[in-house]
Amino acid sequence: MTTGFTTNKEDPKYNYELRRQSLRSSWVPATDEARKELLEGSGIVVEFVIGHSPLPEAEEAVAREQAAHGGFLRLDLVETYADLPRKTLVFFSTVLQKYRPRYIFKVDDDVFLRLDRVAVAVAQWASIEADYVGCMKGGQVLKSPRYRWYEPNHALLGPEYFTHTWGSAYVLSREIVEALLFVPPRHLRRLANEDVTVGAWMLALNATHYDDRRMCAAACSDSSLVVYDYPKCAGLCEPVKRLLELQADPACHSPALQPSGALPLVKPIFIFDAQPDPKWDAKAKNAMRLQRRRTAARIERARHQAARAAKAAVPVKAGD
Image: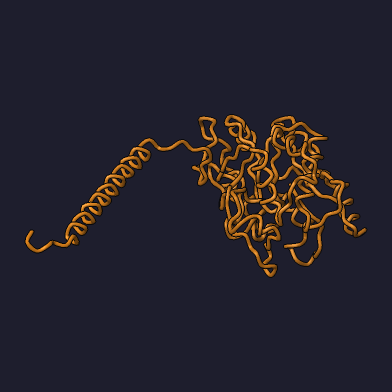
């Protein structure tokens, strides 16, 4: 789970320490014992992912928090919002050095995750050999620097971004991450934002996409995996407050699975490698045949009209 250094303790939006406190009070295992139990029971590791700060006081604050609670994965880089794609690459590399996961589930620290459903969801993704999972979207490429999401590479991209997941939560298979890390970093194009950058890498690597709408649920349900204030915010709008509200919501503690042991799927919006609908295909072919007949009929009428006009234009000699 990606997190950051507190920049303003007075504003909950930028108080990441307070945000992590709410996470430990909701769905994140808060102790070494709880993390060990999760790993042994489900094979899942949950850690706060953070690099380093050039500010000594920020480093000291995270060091105190780590000593008190544990559960941090420190990356060998200095944090900067301007280069989140680099943090993502270092994160992937660090994970594969430390673990051998089937999937890497990346979430931001402002979402609510049904951790008890992850193992079953992983089995579902593996059954279709999905490499790149999340709520897929497109979006306008912004060409003006006055916008927050300005894209300096807009001339390469055209008016719209290719399909990619929301950055709040997405999943990558170990195989696709290994393929990504095999590419020298200088050959990996970095776009303005982390979500579209990862999406570009996945296209280049021919990853198998899967649009899992359970990963952008606006409320807890019998199928939700990741809950946030979609689409109003790219996470929970007030995470410190909303995480605790969701933790108190009985709907967020409903049985992880149906009585049959299944985790419901939600119909995707984006269908990749879809087979044509035979009914639609037959209808389209009939429409094309009809169009060809109409076109042929128009050409034939035009030919007859031209012939009649030419005949009428021939002069008649006197005495004929």
